[in-house]
Image (cartoon, one colour):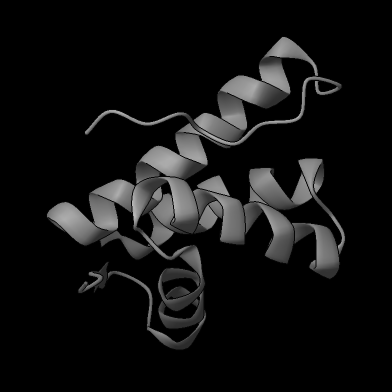
Length: 91
């Protein structure tokens, strides 16, 4: 797919790369599934960069509008599932 990842140009290069890795984890969850621990680690780093809930919702919305992939169900399922399971999204 061709689209732009929503990012904040005030973030450092490392933060931008880490947020993009989180977005790629969301894509992976929808396309083939992702280990719960992998997406959890990506989400934890995302939350270090985007700590506020309102700001998180803003970036989730922008990513969904850009890509068609909604991060919210993946994060919700990740929190509810047990360790060692796969998280898989459905469009």
